[in-house]
Length: 400
Image (cartoon, rainbow, N blue to C red):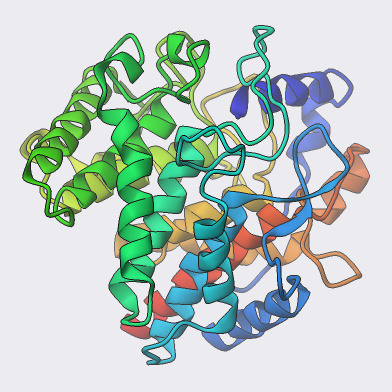
């Protein structure tokens, strides 16, 4: 869903001088302690709606409150990490509510296709083809699969058979050759118009979950197809990697059809997907240098004051602070990785700058939004991403 966001940012830049952006530092002076992060997590939990915690204001062209599947998935992932940190063997209520919502809403548009999307009509590529609300999107489905499999692995009380059925049915369409992008990768969505584009971030994230599920399913034929589909996507990724200036880190453009690097969350999706593929022993793993892929995260720190950026510093036409959503997904990857300790510290120092006077966390840093005169809002999905990111960091802190 990056295309429209990116174009809107460019319009904002037309009215804001780069020099004004450069002076905006969003970092705090000290890294929060694990106890302080725990208190933030407690506060976030109190702010989520008890019966529908993934519901809230969206970050799409709508001012309505909606249920966002990715928000539910992130809350489930965060709840699992919190339970692990506390030494519990059962999921807290927030997590079980989020997990059950995903299972109960696995075919929200009632088209017979299992998967998850967004609750609004969306022209993903700005090409005039509008997908109806609740169209299944690859990235939403991959994140939901990730969360459900984590739940099944963590808790003996998880509805194992329901999860296995939902995951099996949501992944099966991606094994069909006619449901691929032109390069052979998994598509942006299963919609024919979207399959024209070779978009790296959803394909990579899904590839990790395909490889993972090949070790779970008892269907040998499906396991083979899962591995083959994952290998195909990873092969295309490796053939199209870029090398960042100075660092030499590997990164990817948004798609084969574009010459623009990914912003922080979409770069993070790619890193997460490849890391999962490696964790579950993908066939192409020996040729992949994980350290060079993960090192790209450091390219999202400002070269002067080190605050997190929305786009890599070497994209010189845009200089914007990261969104709250960006920080959350990047935390999940960086926390627990000693080689990223400096990057993690900057993320953790930065997130307090997004908190409003009402206690909620907003899309953009509060002071930045005021000085730049850009609309700022409390987005449920973004707070869910922060929740899972902080939960991952607290768990990683315990493991040190």
